[in-house]
Image 1 (cartoon, rainbow, N blue to C red):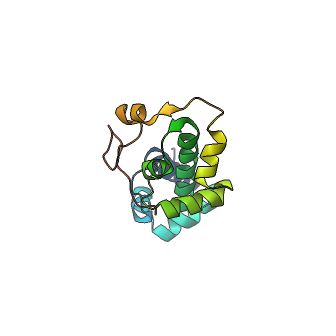
Image 2: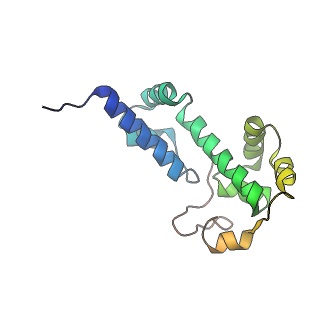
Image 3: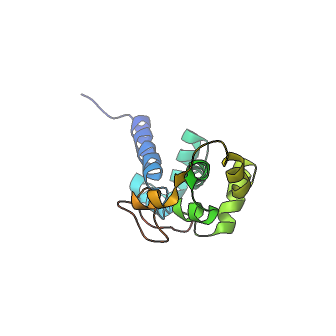
Length: 149
């Protein structure tokens, strides 16, 4: 008879948490929400997630938001503030300091460095297509800006 291995079920649960973060990084996500999704306490989730992926769920969320911000700063014709709000931050200061910590330069310097290398997608097109939420309003299937966790 087939029985589930505890390790296999833990990996499945952690992948579900990671996938949830990947799909909903711009939404408000709390550690309590993730723990509820995983069916474990916040503290146990943090320990298990760190063991499996090398960082806490909230650090992973922050890193995913910054990665998305890098894409938008490179290819979209959006201001740094619009990018900040789009990826789930509501504080430009928090966004800029975390961006600088992970990337090694400010968001504006990063955007200027990439400005001449590629054609930029107009921000109005991104807003119109629902790729990017518009000024606190949600696009189709995409929630508006939120506070980072």
